[in-house]
Image 1: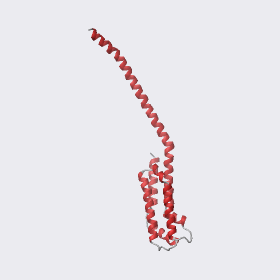
Image 2: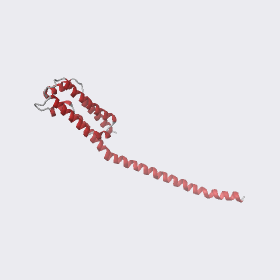
Image 3: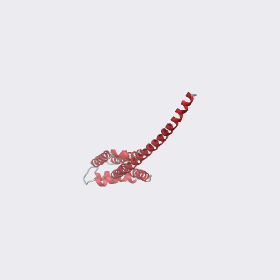
Image 4: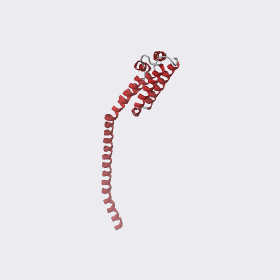
Length: 178
């Protein structure tokens, strides 16, 4: 009987202790959940303040790159009187490569699809410039080469750079609107 009464006393003592442990557990869980929520909100705010401007800059830089490698703009910006077709072609291809290399790190801030569209536009523009060079005699001047480029561009509904710009703009608007 004494053993039973001792057991009852232990149980009576443990019940309040278990209740205290339970209450402490619930309070600590709520505290840590709130802390985690607060940290997540702080991270989201930091990301919005720091990461979003970098994303915006990446979209701006890639659109600028695509505008700069637009074949017609390349012709008007780089063609000089007396220049040979081969020299103009070499200059334009060099400019495209250098500007692309300069913006490589920006791919971190756009989607894979956006990045692929930029790379595809670059490759297709290379093809246009090279095809135009094939269409003129190797000793032609830059005017003949420029005309060949403009003729090839005129045959296309949309240039690769224009398609990539549309993709980037659509992607950017989607990100901006949530």
